[in-house]
Image (cartoon, rainbow, N blue to C red; front, top):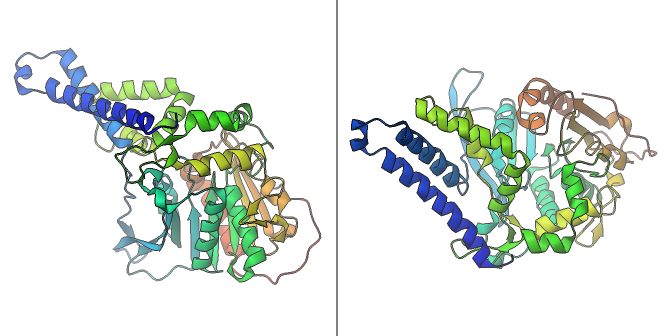
Length: 428
């Protein structure tokens, strides 16, 4: 499948379905048909409207939609989203609230590079911007990155995080969501050895596969079943002629979306069928619950082939992070070198992607960190999305994370500590 023709064929099919939807909507909405009302035409127009929007959103990067913020003074302050560091594969962006005093907590929110844009964390950013200076890793769509920019694998990703942490300084609190949790832990350990003065104050890991084998899920089982050769042959394609990254090897976003949808095909099918009925009855709107969710869910980005393949091989199959054998730029990273960065793990009891046990494994790896600087929390009844963007995050997890930051707002002197078992109890 590693041909431009395959990539362009997928884009052609997407474009064709978008065109069919627009054509059906336009034809069925032709004014002359109003003289003889027909339910079939109403359905056709509704189907066309939903179909056009669905396929159009697949290639559109969502907007952050965070334009103003109401501060304690009762005034709406404009929010500027400015790039602090610009790199070929991703930027470090700052959500600056104009006219507001700088907040005491400076937070680096590490977004996943797992098929969706960083805007998937929009609600997380909104909740943190209330009383934090928020910075986010805004990863770029690989299809828009010229081949001349070179490769990007797990080591490059880790090095990007190291550079972002250095840029923000040692008074930073880092929150890694889902996929980047193990690499963020590695980046922190790398700094602990190479540049201790640049280490963050605290590190919060949310629902990440630090040790995928701790509690196997369908995702980790898939990584075990297939070989690297099978993955490369069936999942990797070259970007077609339409985009700047023409010729770059990627795991296409449209292919990823197919996998996402197939996991809950019946539920998605019902959601779109119900939406067509709502459009027919005039009950749908541009920003109703269906469109708000699927405008984000359907917006997918291509992933660099090297990053996808190295993630599967090194994080999931070989478990280099879990075994404390990860290497960055020829340097073996030792998680035990983390001695004065407070580490907290957050997991969802009902998480079927990164199940409880996978993330808390990070605490056992931090053998040089005293128990007083370790904490963990398992949120009852919460799934994967809920622990960083749903009600569980807003009502329960966010207050715990803020308290954890406050408790570790100052650096404690470095001291050698004997290896201790991880603190498995829920802590602030």
